[in-house]
Amino acid sequence: MSSKIRILPEDLCNKIAAGEVIERPASVVKELVENSLDAEASEIAVEIEMGGRRLIRVTDDGWGMGRDDILLCLERHATSKIKSAADLFGPHTLGFRGEALPSIAAVSRMTLRSRSSEDEEGWLIYAEGGRIRKAEACGLPHGTVMEVRDLFFNTPARKKFLRRETTELGHIGDVLGRLALAYPHVQFRLRHQGRSLLDLYRHENILERAGAFFGSALARDLIPFRRETEAGMVLSGLIAQPAVHRPSSQGIYTYVNQRFVRDRVIQHALREGYRQLVPQGRFPVAVLFLEIDARRVDVNVHPTKHEVRFSEQGEIHDFIAAAIRDALRPSGWLRQPVAGGRSGENDAGPASPDGASSTVKPEVDAGRRVAESLGRYAAGLSPVRGFPEPGAFRPPARQPELQSSAAEPPAGFFTSMQIIGQFSGSYILAQNGEDLVVIDQHAAHERIGFEKLRQQFRKGSVESQQLLFPVVVDLELAAAALLTDHLEELRRLGFEIEPFGGPSFAVKAVPAILQGAEIRQLVGDVADDLEALDKSSSIETQIDLVLVRMACHGVIRAGQKLSAAEMGALMRELDLVDFQAHCPHGRPVMHRWHQAELEKFFKRS
Ligand code: ADP
Ligand code: MG
Image 1 (cartoon, rainbow, N blue to C red):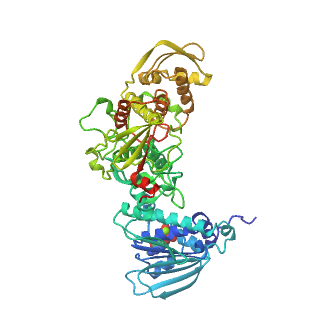
Image 2: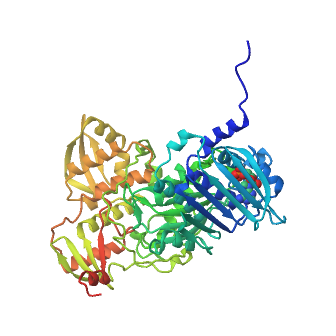
Image 3: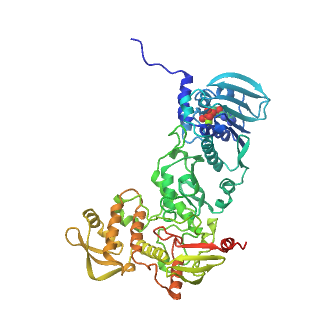
């Protein structure tokens, strides 16, 4: 019997590889522009026709290719970038698999022109469906021009999947944006049908580049930062003020060793850093560059190299989360650590990172250790819901440079406002400079209660208030079982609860802040939360959730008249709070209208 197995011909292999690497015009742009960057180009121009279907042309001023190289580069596994398996650990180039050009050539009509700086003349190669049809000398300034026409002309199935011109163009824009943010010193241009869509000159740094790319309005809300571990891991980049959040993760750009990646660990750590600051279901805006020893990350996980694998996930996660948190601290959203300690109650706890330091250790807090067993119920739940519009709150003073963060706490932000009065028994009206400020007294009080509880909890000293008569609470079976499991943690939260037979419990003491709360409702809610906590968020998140729940039980309600002194007291307390903008449920605490906005409304400007 003759053998059934055969080795596939080279051009078929290339078509198969193209199936993996070249999904759409944007994939071609990615591969070609990455090659230009690897060739150390300082100017890259991308020209597109019909969303990339008809033409993709990438021109660069990189080091180009000589005659031998240009003939070789269409061969499969032809690369100048690695030599041995050892180089796979941390190639310093974007490409290294030697697959892109043969794959693109296999599914298009491709013209390559290139001239290396040593050569007198350039070379041209024309290939159709991967077959070289023409090779000749040509005149060219040094650099490379890659022209890809009629993409997928010989793979109709793939061609059918191409979307509308604007959609494909959108993908191309995304790809270029990701690369442009990582290479601010390189000039990028994108033209479609001769019209300029993107024109990024060489920039000094990432902040300038981001300004040009995102627009100056958003750029004003970006905080540059850089944090480093003793082991040499570096996280740097830009993070947006928490008021700027988006409905998707589109505004999040993450890079590992300058390569754009989509990574679950980094994404999660970023959101952990913004925890409580950005509403649930919304995403921050950030450009993050992680630099890490190349031996600790595998980039060769997927042909498009959009995924990586870390050898020490947990450590990287904690470093990133703490670094983000720390970098957000001077933004005015997190209370400043006060030099000398203004009042003991104000300190967030012994192990919380201090905004002035630039070396971050993973955040460890008392709650974490004590509530270890809660881990099993950890949840993807976040206490923050129903958020305000972006820009609802602008923190007072911004300090882009972290080094100066110890200098000026934004304390007194609320107390320095001039109180105008109370509106409708629910809102405090105040003036702050040129702003009219409206504070939701209920939300503000909730925020304060939450912060107090949290601070006390972190110090292991939630003040407890004995009840005159124990209150008996009946729970559902599952909730009762959970409560029984967590009586010890609840004690740390200020509760004294004893089993009272079956699903009943006797509540003997509650956190002092919550005295006067409806006890049955309170304990029922806390038990519900324990039940909901079943997946993988940090213990801190879980504790916060319970604290949030507790906080909203002991507060000033809306519709309660406040005296001037009471309003003043509320403002003073707000100044002591860590996150000033939103109540723990995610409702905004305040809103500001700038005088200019009012003037515009009244058509006075
Ligand atoms: P890889 O980038 O993985 O090496 P490619 O198929 O993308 O594989 O490219 C093959 C080789 O062609 C590269 O290693 C490089 O030497 C050369 N090359 C491709 N594009 C350019 C360019 N724009 N400038 C200079 N050399 C290039
Ligand atoms: Mg390449």
